[in-house]
Image (cartoon, one colour):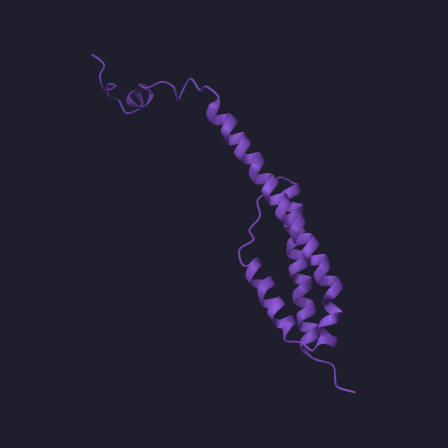
Length: 121
């Protein structure tokens, strides 16, 4: 019988860390916060590459965890898109709403102590 592959524990640990990052991002989004996913795609790609080099028998032990990670990543993707759409809608509504202060062409001129262009003194 072949000795256990020492990389398996390392790769399982990385998979668990990635799953924790995704779960934390989903929690943060559901609370209305921002998420920083910088580097996540690279970590997942590196994990997949490493798993592809394992013997089939060793890699098979990751199937359920990887399927769960894919499901969680899909849910995160939907949550990010939903938040983006919500913020875009809010920004659009805000841009369409009249704002007495920003509709005043002389406001900036008065703030800087100059007369508005095209107006008599």
